[in-house]
Every structure is written in structure tokens, then in C-alpha cells.
Length: 383
Ligand code: ASP
Image 1 (tube, protein in one colour):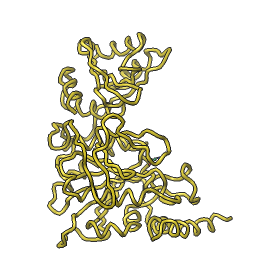
Image 2 (image 1 turned 90 degrees about the horizontal axis):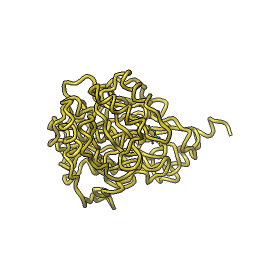
Image 3 (image 1 turned 180 degrees about the vertical axis):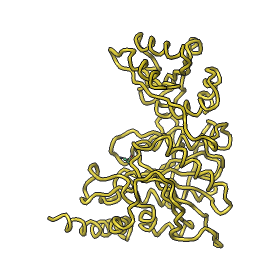
Image 4 (image 1 turned 90 degrees about the vertical axis):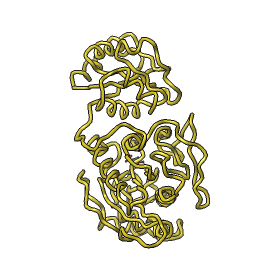
């Protein structure tokens, strides 16, 4: 079959299987609406409705950043070789017209990248735009479409710097928009539903995939390709969307959003924090290299309960003497790294139950406020 024939078959198949226009419309509109890969915040592009609404529906802004949810392939069984961040926000919105009955939805393309390429500059742009929008009376909630690979990092960053109790829901998908049984359309619909629910206020930044509502603080990606990849292994989900209803069962016990002290409104960059992984036979040279490259903090994905080998301890302690904060996390995947009475003397902190990638986010923000190791430990205990 030629590529052209395949491309025309995919929308038909998707429509047939999914029963409506859904993502198939998105695919056909792909070429016309694909956004650029520029990291510039684009102008607001209202899609389905203008901002000022007189109906009773919540006004929800969708900020699009790319990822698999905006991914495209010419083969509808392709769930790995597709291009992430290929479709624009209008394509995503227009592909789920059902959202119009639950919210006044408008969209804005912030960036269009695969989430491995989300960097500090993008985090700051996204957070500032989120805060600007949430400060407006005509915005009731925000949905952020994002690649799943680093989704938890962005969600946790926002959880610490958003200055509003209005709902912010980060959503992704594991299958590209062009796949049979793409999970993006329903995830997006559910994310809008959750963002518009009064019970979502004050819950901190939320993550929505696979009908589950997770707290940014607790949720993590656990499987490379499976649709049910996002789990809160120890703490559990906050709730679920079932039969068009939003259910909450748990609350985050950690500080977030309006109770957070972190403020990025005047920041143009974040301190460099690197992550080093523990393994047998490791040496200290990676610590030396990180310090030489300008790291102000190092998160260690330690073995077990945040352990470091003798050789990496040497590197970490040498870094600590130069004022670098060493945050002991774990490579294990779940559990708390417990504090040690010897931590502070070496400029070490323990990261509670934060995995290394989230510990890096908190340490960057902590270093915007202080270099005091005890204060930074307090942040790790509270956030
Ligand atoms: N595989 C990724 C995703 O699920 C790609 C990305 O993170 O952008 O979205």
C-alpha cells in the first residue's frame, strides 16, 4: 500500500473504531494546523468559544505543549515510531467536540515538543502563562497537554509554583493521535471535565490519564508503553472519572500551590541541579564533573534507602564542601528515603518519597530561596 493510501485509510478506520469524528479529524487536519517546534509562547487562539461566556459552563483554557497526545504517524498500528508533538492545539480541541457540552474551551500553543525536550526555560514560560491565566476572572481552570515521559516533572513544578486554587490538570496519552484506540481524546475530555469540577479546587496540580486523577506530588510513570502507566504506588490516586462523574477519595498532604513559598514570577532561569545514579563499581568523577559544570545541587538516585558507595560519597562530600547540596533519593521506585543524623554536616538532605526527577525540581526551587541545608531539608519534609 502506498503511504498516501495508508494516510487516507487511517481517518476512516479511526472514525469507524471510535464511532465519531474524534482524533481522525485531527489527523486529516494535521498538515494544515501542525504547530512549529519554536519555544515561543504563541498568541492566544480561541477555538470553540470566545473567553467571555454567559452560559453556566466553566471556562477552561487548554495549554498545549506537544507529546504523544499530539503525536502522529502514517500507520495506525504504530505506537512507538510516531512523531510526538506533531499536531496543534486546535486540532486536538476540534477532534473532541464533546468537550463543548461540558466547558467553554479555548486553546493556546505554548510549545510543541516531545517531553524529553521540556527544559527549564519551557517550565518557566508555562508556569508564568498558567499563573497569568488563572488570575483572570474569565478562566476557571487550565488543562495542559504534555508528553508523558517527563509529565510528572512539569506537573510537580507547577504544583509548587502555581499561585491559585483553581484546577490545573496535566494530561497526556500513551498512544499517538493516529493510533487505533488512541487514548488521547478521552483523556482530554476527562481532563476538561476534572478542570471544570468545583471539587477539583484546591487539590494541587492534578494528572489525568486512564480515568484516574493523580496528585502531581505522588504520581509517576511506571511503564514504558502501557496505557495504565501512571501510578501512585504508595499513596494512591486522589480520585477517578467514572461515567462522566468526578470522584475524589484522597487529598495531598504535602504543601502545594497557594500554600507554597516558591515564586517564579521574577525568575528567568533556575539553578543547575543534576542527577547521578548509583551502581556497583562507580567512581567519584561524575560528581567532580557536575561541580565543574556548575551544578549547585546534585540529586543522587541512591541504592536502597538512599545509599551511596564509598567512592561516590567521596565525590558527594567534596561537592558538599564547595556548597553544593546533595539530595539523597533512591533508584528503587518507591518508598521513603529516611533522614540521617549525619546528612546536614556533609551538606546532604534526604528526599522523603520524592523520586530523583521530582527531587531535582524541588531542589532547583529550594536553591532559588536559600543555600541553608537545614532549611532545604525542611522543604523536602513539607513539599
Ligand atoms: N512517549 C512520550 C509520550 O508519551 C513522548 C513525550 O513524552 O513527549 O508523550
